[in-house]
Image 1: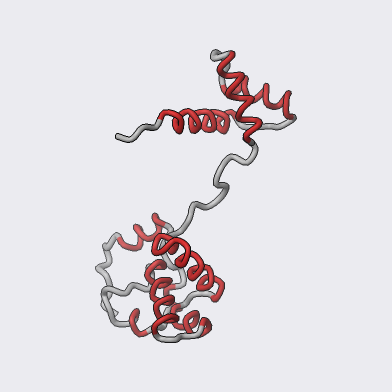
Image 2 (image 1 turned 120 degrees about the vertical axis):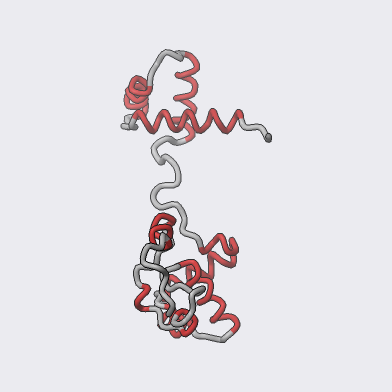
Length: 159
């Protein structure tokens, strides 16, 4: 395989985007052995090519997993994501919680009402109010984010 120059930023860029394949040494498919274009470190490219091999070259899931260095569950998940969201489905999603799980709609409504009635309250004071009313400990920064996020959504207008 034609290696990238040693000072290439590609591995760092792949790492930063969450698309670096740490198991690149396990990739045995011929496309990835002697090409500058096909990079075994690029997880999105591996997933796409494994799906292409399944569909157009009639690979089995086991064969695709072995040749592309991916697990069978990874390939099944890639198939599902690709079918539902296209190429974007092969990109890594946001890890961790997708939204504040303690700030339920009821808690948020309470926060909005209290902060509208008493705009001088800061996030620490609002957190204390939530703790008293809902018996729920919410970090002040979470409260700030929830209130700011909702305020921004209400003000958005197309440019």
